[in-house]
Image 1 (cartoon, helix red, strand yellow):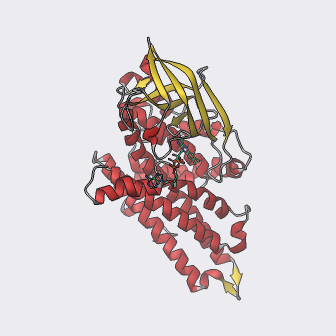
Image 2 (tube, protein in one colour):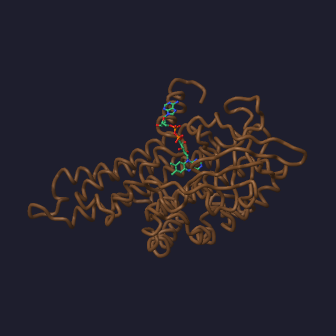
Image 3 (cartoon, protein in one colour):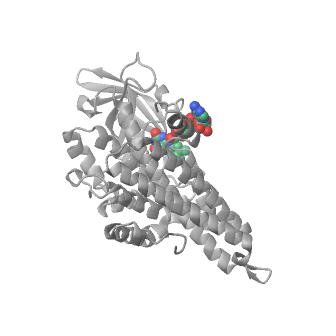
Length: 393
Ligand SMILES: Cc1cc2nc3c(=O)[nH]c(=O)nc-3n(C[C@H](O)[C@H](O)[C@H](O)COP(=O)(O)OP(=O)(O)OC[C@H]3O[C@@H](n4cnc5c(N)ncnc54)[C@H](O)[C@@H]3O)c2cc1C
């Protein structure tokens, strides 16, 4: 093990290692100088030039097939890219997750050939930026309780409803929106997914939320008011939207795990440096047995999370069912991230409680990971416990 990471040569390909190095170069040279600016508390306009640049480099469509504008790499490559970006700015990694991990995944799962060519391909190349609109003020974990409706009138769908906490909402080019197409149905049934151009006159947005962390991309409310879209903006079959969304969320959960590992790795690296530099009682604090033990636990947990994440990626790429495994690694990695970032603050003492030190930002950024894309409670109760009890999930 070197610097908190097992020797990757044993389990990564040369291409995967090269990708890590090239993303690190982008992250250090182009993203790091702007990471503080992105985290400013009153920051409201995400500099989308960073997203377009990530698109130019192929990062927004890494695991999307080449014929649809992607680079056709495997899922581990996508996780490596997210981890390296999150080590520098978890806000930017969240923006990429909303775009690729969630919105574009809907096209991969349910899009027609024409939709993939017309909408997925430009977005995979990073020419268009997407947002994913599922959550509503009254329906978060219980997404089946959504009330946003879509009604077919002639050749158009008419969407009405409010979506809440939508990342990339202020500046994206289009939304992937979930809405109820069967007013009689309840829960997951009768929900469909749509492509909605952000410039549609029926779309308006609220103010960005003042978030604790993961700043950079705005997250906020989107209103759909008699929003008319062509009939062929329906993605997949009418009423089958939930299946598409849940498949997309499986992938999104892997992305959150990678993001968590990136934040934790950066916190660990900083904690090691600080433990070596900071002297108290005449020697570096890292020489105190308890600080060394903290570092040992942090490194082990990060490596465990990364190893399991790559294992689940291999299951996904082999075409195996991986819903429960995605839930398990999301819960483990996100909670690991909260623990590791908290310990990194502790190792920094009072300095860890100052905005001057990046471990403070990482600590704030960590908490979202146990909430978004399936809270720890929901994944434990509705996926993992059910699997243990041989129930349907
Ligand atoms: C910064 C940020 C960005 C986001 N970006 C997006 C986005 O781009 N697109 C999008 O659609 N959404 C987005 N979200 C929304 C996010 O997915 C939801 O916040 C999340 O699903 C939880 O829903 P909620 O906030 O309504 O919490 P609630 O569902 O109200 O849950 C509150 C608490 O109750 C617990 N709970 C609820 N039901 C149960 C149960 N049955 N059993 C046990 N415990 C339960 C939860 O685990 C949680 O602890 C974002 C949220 C944030 C904070």
